[in-house]
Image (cartoon, rainbow, N blue to C red; front, side, top):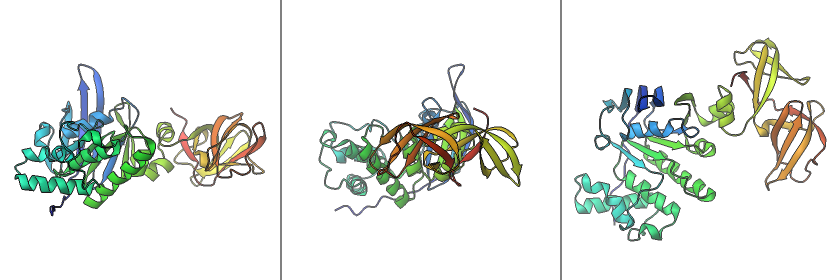
Length: 358
């Protein structure tokens, strides 16, 4: 029985004015600065082409920065090759050797690290135990489910005890139920071992579920950095509000600001909320579907255009002079009929004012 334990040796990661340019003028990452604390799981989130995967690959040493500095711990690794950086990467494709057993796959990297055969085996078995695959060491990857193959890839990275563990879209090949289970496994291992993890995804729910901090990227730069709750509740602009979770974006007018509280007007309905530094004039209101209130005595006139039962809730599309919004309600026993006229108002917490800019 293996008595070896896998330990974390987390290090912080620092990006200082880092850019990456491909060819003469294709800017993949544009002058970003970023501090990732040791022992935290930080997710790089954004649409395709925003620069998140290139940023991850620069940490790994699979791409070299065109300018700026990258530090892991107190060591400048900007010009170091991947083999000289104490990092491990879990790829989207798992990259398992089909002709090798599970144990041989997990042991592969250890064979280049100077461990004896017995220690290599013990460490590999400990890694498999850690990811819940004890007893499957002699199977081939083809004999495992997709989630089990992903766990093998995680074990192979963990046994090297890297300073930083990198994940590139690790759940994209799994179905929805399995994604939820594996992301919980990854988060649990990260917290148990105190690992520094940098995680790339384009899935907002996945990012919200696993992260200590999220870096939202857009157009090769950083749009906003914050905790999942801070980004969800306090987006700094229209892009982040629309990208993190679902948000309705409504044009409004700030008619008064008093002691940092704004009064806004939408089609004659007024609502008070934090001004967030904005002054009188046009603005954008971001409001989550669950923060829309339907059916009270006051509010904006609306019509129920669509009503969809999804089991645990009702989903509605409301239309009015404001345009169209998406709302949800927990009451599935007494749904609103399509075509009915309703009043739509806003919860006291949740709506956020944004500058009237794209």
